[in-house]
Length: 442
Image (cartoon, rainbow, N blue to C red; front, side):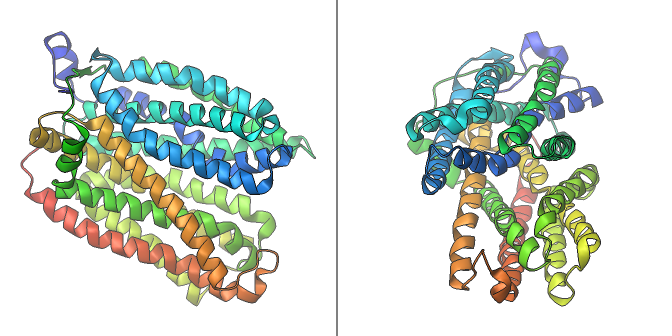
């Protein structure tokens, strides 16, 4: 069985509580994947399309195929992390193994990715995102092995979320700063400035990895995919948490898919949309520590319900009084961003469920379960993009002249994520009751 139980050789380390140094080091290791997530997906497709080697229509197909691959490979990577490389420091080894190709492929993509044909670039992106997933899944499951109480998981994943928001701010700021200091800078120049931040982020993460206490992973044969599926489906809190992850990702994906159109045709701030998006991440960075404290004090499901209701209320309020001018729009974006901390609650709730899941199925599946959550997030975002664009077509929205359907666009921007968060609140109520019935953490 893959477990993170204490061993005699690690008794001194295992008995120690989470220290500020451990929390800070663990949070710092999240920066590379945070930076290479959303910002990279924003800049990379236009950069590839601009190269002219791959037709614009095929660029969308390319990234859809890589997303599908990423979704398939995540559970496989989770199983691999759980079952192989046993002993002390297994999480650390997987992260270091992933970091080497991740950095090398990143450098290759930003310097020559726009010159590659479809098949070659697909292979490069498959390797890149597989390395990304390996690093992230190993890092998330290491966090679950570090915590010993629900308050610990709230603090650890709360600070991880905060560090991720800081990395996002830096990632979005780098291209803007480069464009400001070098007028007329090409898209490739901007994406290279963005990727150049990894020259700072990666060494910091590598240094931080050395200062996280190691945890043992004792790998034993798995229980088979049929039993894995049965064990998961028969554990209601886990299924409810997967639903929460999907709905939260669907709501967030809806906002990001429609935000540029909303800024252009509802707020009339097309030339400031990047700054408004940047403001939302500032709000998230400022709010993350506060949400982590509230989660420790009042519990994670109630605080995630409050998060969903807060964002939904802000969105609905714009139907009565929409922001006017850049100042009000920036304040609205900043306030909206304070609620973009769902993963803080979701990852820490999974960390609390992992010991109970291990007791039920006889083995620790932490990496596999975090991979499943990542899969739900990717499916949620993909579904949001597909539904959003179908809805835009249904309301007759024309991206070149959206003024005629601006009101319908505004309603879609507000109602689609809000309804998703309302359903999520219902699932969280059920999850909260289920978690309250579980025995004390093992």
